Length: 549
Image (cartoon, rainbow, N blue to C red; front, side):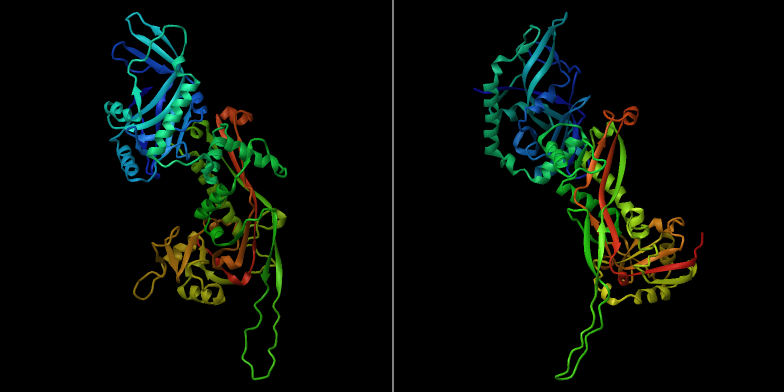
């Protein structure tokens, strides 16, 4: 005997984006009356608020199909690629479509607006009916089992395509005019049987991955999204347990989680995208709040050739310790509650991107202008220090800077530190210095500053090395000595520490009066990090006596 199933459709809600194969839209607007339905007896229908929320708590797997065809699965709650939630408007779905051939085709059709219809399949567990004076009925659904969602070109084809799954499509549900109708024909045993039938069908059509095969990264992303949306779940409870079991940290609150391994790495990767100086440093991620690194005082004398039976004279080779200690750095962004629950936003990626971007800018600025331990800041390359003096070249005026000045400056650094061109030897310069160098040309009027498309994240090279621009270097408050150009091997010359256990705190209107009044939520990302000069000889600074305003 076939199981009975009901399909519902909605127009002009499903949209696609250019951000990967991502689509999103409202599957159903709760508490809104539908168009008239039924073939024998006409009725309108609404799904009451919180009905979908209860259905999602069932925990059954829900798949996103093309045309209700299990052979064309687009996404699934099984691996987190399909996300469903009920908000104040209704049931919202977002999906990262698998990059199969049909997945790419359907994403294109959705993005271009050819497919705009959505369908979902449900088994009604509890409803109530009311007969109107014109003979039609009103149906209010308060409990249901959600089976699937689909993108469909023409709803008329839905019945024939889904019938292959041994499910009858019910066009005329049984009308019961009692106050509320529990579907006795669909008891727990029937529900379990229905789930088993769907599972058996899926095993025959798509590869099945057990819950214990879900990757740690997927669990972290789910938990992080639950945390941001203030939802409950095993994943977010696991993240919170990390905080509860760790050593208490000043400022830690119950509204906080520790960024786990994979998301910690994403934070660092996003910082690399906006913080090129930090990206090129020698970075460590220790579990503790400090780290000792051995640095070379000098390389000693070079090797020599000696005569037969003569002794090799040993040369001193000395090391010193560089201590990196935990300094709390952080940033915060304020977002409206609407943004947190917005229909078209990947909240996990958005939060990681924005917070990491801000933290990255701050870290790069600290590498250049940090005032050191006494100020709870990094040790800045452009801040004079008796312990780590970086050699400087002085040029009279930026407007008089020539290519000969730059070549002499380049050649003054030990070649051993700039041999690895592709990785760590880079230029960092102010915008004003960059604009001046961009005007320098050879005898054939070819600019010395070359545009280089293949390098990701930068578009220019000078003398074969990548060029990065720091707007902060033009700030006279930060840089009163007009040190506008730095060149060298940052991997050898500077070391940074990013302690594992970056924390994210969520300040909401539920707990904070300010956020409640503003209707906003505050995300605070903070962690412990440090940065120090490792080998001064690997870096060189150019300063200018006068700089045009």
